[in-house]
Image 1 (cartoon, rainbow, N blue to C red):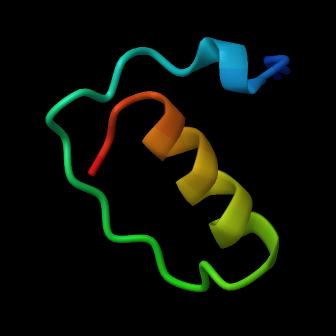
Image 2 (cartoon, rainbow, N blue to C red; image 1 turned 30 degrees about the vertical axis):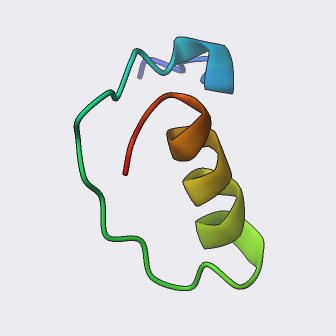
Length: 42
């Protein structure tokens, strides 16, 4: 079993990519969407 230490620093540029994230008003969806936008996603 491989355990990967995944952080927001591991997210490469998402410029020009579009994501549909559900549940963005709180929790994991909210935090995920914030980080994707920081990396250039729409």
